[in-house]
Amino acid sequence: MRRSYGRENRIAGKVEFWKDPRRRKKFKTEHFTLVLRKNDKDAKRLGLVVGRKVGGAVSRNRIKRLVREFFRLNKEKMPESSDFIVLAKENISIKGYREVFEELKVIFN
Image 1 (cartoon, helix red, strand yellow):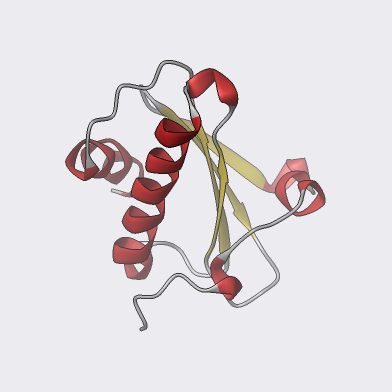
Image 2 (image 1 turned 60 degrees about the vertical axis):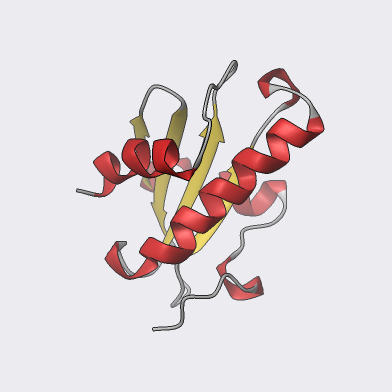
C-alpha cells in the first residue's frame, strides 16, 4: 500500500462531509472528535475541520499537517472504504506529532 496522501484520500466540500448522518459513529478524545463513516468508494479518506477558535492560521495549519501525517502513516491499520472526519476542539494544546499519535491511536485500537 502506498503511504501517500493524494487527492483520492481527501474529503472536500460540505456535502461530502455531512451526508448520510445515520451511517456514522463518533469517537471523542481530549482534543479531537472523530467521525467514522463507511463510503461507497474503495478508498480511505480524511476530512479535517479546524475552526478559528482553535487559534491563528499557523496553529490551525500545524494541527492539520500533524493529523494528515498520522493518517498517512497509519492508513493500513484503518478500516477499508471509510471516511474519517477529524474535528479539532477549541484551545487545543498539541505540541507535536507524538501527542497527536498518542491521542488518535487510542481510537484505532
